[in-house]
Image (cartoon, rainbow, N blue to C red; front, side, top):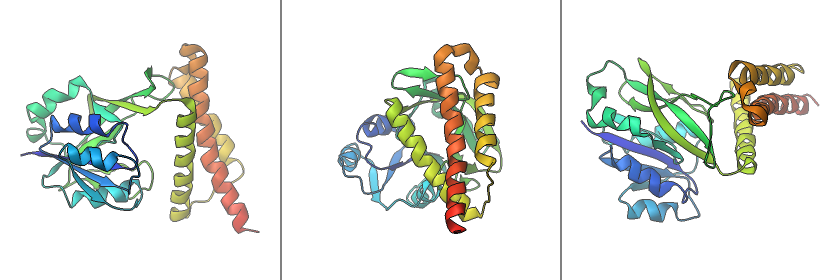
Length: 250
């Protein structure tokens, strides 16, 4: 029983070759759902033998769900383009251990990198992400941002993904800012209400957790910096939602 690699893309020419070649080591097909990239993403993916389907972006979860119909296998390895299997993953796939185990989905520990610097403190590790699942009993949620896999029997594994998401603080902050916009859309969709204390409480809680509970305090100025990033964007998603409510009440 094979594995289908499934990746959603938009302007990912930097990582797409490494991503596809990594998937091809353990998958017998790679399906790319591309949101009309304007760089060489599609050209590179096609040249490497991946199947490319164009689809305007539907949101993180819905876009992944859309791609499932093009996969021929039950087992889906659905990484992001900037995520790569670490060496401890390959025996699991080569031995097809997932066929002997009772789980229908597997989370990986993500090793996050800012350029080439690993961030393994301040709540940035283990940063579990479910990227492998059996689509017969598990599937992506409908969340527009940071979807999760809804599974019957999820296993938190000790396998790792290498996550090279950001080249600079500027890029990291820009992505985090975009995520907060999407999270506000999710709040609106769910009818969530916030109050004036919500941004402060969530921001302070996020900093306390990252700096004190998740060992940021032991990493000098880097610990402060990455704890503040966690805190600020936790604050901002509620501050943005509060602004939406105020605009509606005018």
